Image (tube, rainbow, N blue to C red; front, top):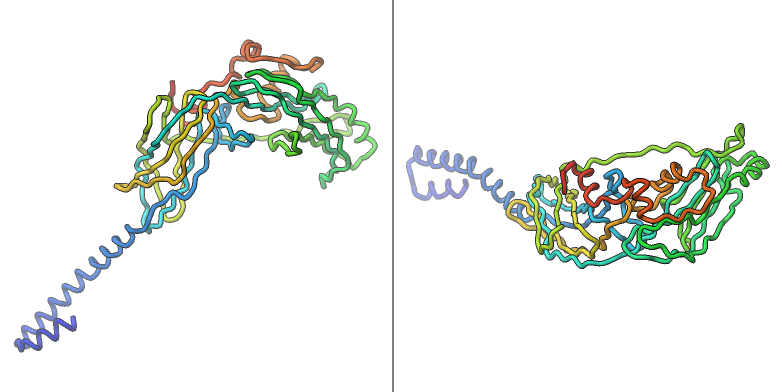
Length: 369
C-alpha cells in the first residue's frame, strides 16, 4: 500500500487520480490478502504428515464375536483376526481413509500344537476339575503344572493358608484330545473354614512349570456357613459389535488385497480397524498401506503371524468354559477320569467344533461361505 502511494506521488499524477490508485490498492489488498494467507496455510498444512505409528492384533472369539488378546506363549492366532492401526494425523482438518491394502502377502502351511485348559467348580457335588485339551493340529506332551487353593479372609481377602497340588505332565494329547488333570473334592476344606470364622473365600489358581500364573485360570468360591458348603458367585458377560469394519479376505493365495472403506482421521491419534480372514493353518506375512485421498501411507511394520485352525470353538483356555458345561451335562458326578477325543465330542455336541467362518459372520454380520 505504501509502495503504491509512493509510486503514484513520484509519477506526479493529479490528486483525483492518486486517490483512485490508493482505493484500488486497498481493494486488492483486502481481497487477495486473505486468499493468499489461506492458500499458504493450506499448503503448509498439507505438508504435515499422516503416519502409522503403531498397531495391535486381536483374535475374534469364536463363541461370542468379541476381540481378545493372545495370551499363550506361542502367540497363536485363529483364522479371523482384528488388526487395529494407530494413525497420527498432524493436519488441522479431518482426513478420511478410503482404502486399506495388504501387500507382500505370503502364506506358508504349518501345523501347531496348542494346549489349553478348562474346568471349574460344581456346586452340586462340591468338586473341582482341571481339564487339558489340545486345540492345535499336532500332538503335544503336557508340561507339569500346579494348582493352589488359597483360604482368604472376609473383606480383606488376605491369604491365611494355602494347599498346592502338583500335576505331573506325563501325558501326550493328540489333536482334539481332552483329559482331566485333577478332580478334587472341596468337602475336605470345610473343616478349615469351620475352625476359622474369619475365612469366607476359597481362591483357586493354576501355575505353569515356571511358576507363572495362568491369567484366565482363576476362580473363587464363597463358603456359606448356614449351609456348610461352597458356592460359585454369579458373573456377568459383555458383548462387541464389529459391524462396519472392513474384511481383507485372504482365503485365496494372492500377493495383494485391498478393500474400500471410509474411516475418519481427526487431528491427533486415531484407530483404523480391519479384519483379516484366512482358510488354513499357516504362517501369514503381510505389510499394510492406507490411502487418504491421493496419498498412500505405508506402515513400517512387517507382520508375521502364526495362524492355526482350532479344533474347538473355545480358542483360549478358561474356567467355566464349554467343556465344563459338557461335563455338567454328561458326567455330572465326576466319578471317573475324563479322557475324550474329537470324535466323541462331536457325537455329544457338534456345536463345540470350530467353524472357521462363524466368528467372521458373528462379528461383522456378514454372510461368509
